[in-house]
Length: 257
Image (cartoon, rainbow, N blue to C red; front, side, top):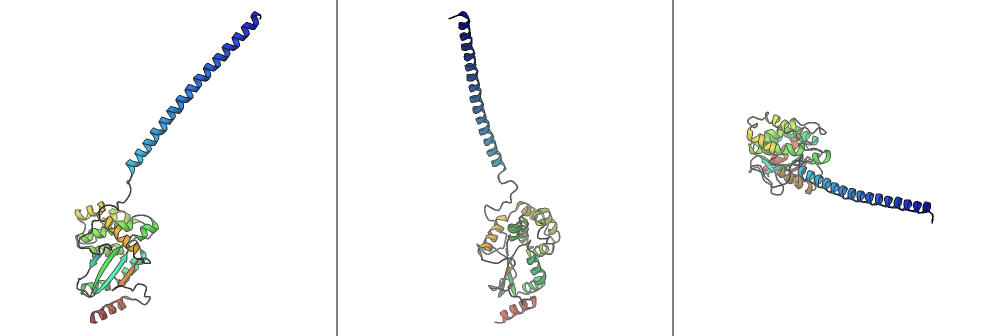
């Protein structure tokens, strides 16, 4: 073999060795990159989980936890705020949502008659609060307004504040009652209601869980919607001929029987 051929073979072997060394070095870099990328993914996932855990519940309205009923309420699994004398022979059961336009229409039409009958001792009313519009339209105004009315009940001001809320009801699509500041502002229309205790009750959502319990009772009651109005257990809101005068007459006749 000539010296030239031997030199060519040696050069080829050297090139092959260099190429193999490069391949091994490249493979090591790839393995290192894969390992480091896996570590980064794990750390990123851990960071994401940590962030989700840290933010869990933020921005939500707390409707869970122990049920704290407002003072003087009744109803057990179907919570109610009673208005009127316990001795009244007739009971009007009203399921309402403070964001519900039909509820406002009912209140505007029957408010004075109901006050007359409760003040005279002929009628007691059980108000059950629902959050139907929150569920249908989104938002939390039904819940927050109901909680605020429960706070007013603690102060013995429920009937007056209940009326103020319906008299100042925003448009159904406007969730203004979700603003606690608005609810506190409206409390200024009820003499003696806007106190530090009332404000804290509203801002803390003290009775949110109680309102949620009431709404669950509404959902399980098989009612068609709000308002649902029962006189001594009979649904009278479905009566197309019902008027405030007819309601008053029915109660007075019930008293005589």
